[in-house]
Image (cartoon, rainbow, N blue to C red):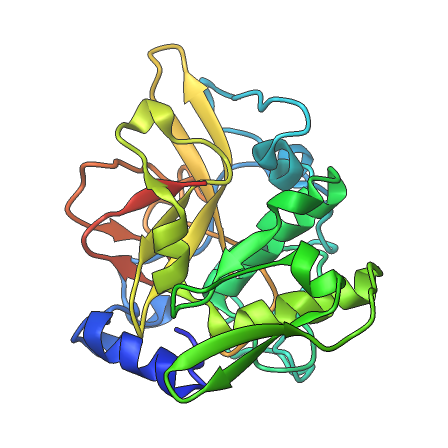
Length: 292
C-alpha cells in the first residue's frame, strides 16, 4: 500500500510484490457480516489520553511493563486524541470506515498522500529516536536499497533519482530544525514502503518474544503492516495485544478494535505460528511478525 513515483522503485516492486490485488487481503465491512462485531465489552477509560491509561486488559490479565525510554514505552504512552475522534485523511476529510478503531494517535498526517501504512511505523520509530536524542540511528532504506540518514539530510545532502540509480550530494545548508526533520520523513515516505521496512526488521521467533513496537507485515505492492501498541498477559503467561496502523490513502494513525471477539476487544489473541492473522481491516497471510 505504497505510492511508487520513480522508475527504480517501480522495477523493484514488479519483481518482489505479491500477485493478489489489495481487495484480496482487505476485509469486508463488518456491518455486512454477521460474524463481525466492532463493539466490545471491556471498560474503556474514555477520559484518559494514552494507550496504557485508556485501555484496561481483560480480567485476569495485566499490562506488561516496558523498559523506560524504550520504543514500546514511547508507543504505550503516546498522546491520544479525545475518545471518539474520527480518522481523517491527509486532505482533512474523514474516511468512510469509522467503526473499526478505538483511538486516534495525536500526530499529524501531513497534507500530502504520503504517510500511509509503512510510513506510520517509520514515523513513530523516527519520532521515538528523535525524542530520546538518538539522532544517528534515524536512517531508513529506500525500496531501492539505498540508505538515507537524518544526519546526512540535516547536513544538506539530498537524494537524486536518474533512471535506475539514486545519487546523493550536498545541495542545501545545515538545518537541524524539527520542520526539516519532517521534510526528511516526507522524503522517506516517498521512497520507502513495506518492502524496505521488512528488510530493516528481523523475525520474531516466538509469542513470548513479541513486544510493543513489533510489527506484522506483508511486504509488497500492495502490502500492509500493523504495529503492536500494547501487551498484557495472564498468570499462565498467555499474552494479548493491541494493534495500531496507518492506511491508504494517508490518514490518522489509529488503534484497531477487534471485530472478531467483543469479549476482549480491542485486544487481539496473536500467534507467530498461525498461518494467517486477521485484523479489523486486513488479512496477513502468511503471518509475519518482525522487530526493529
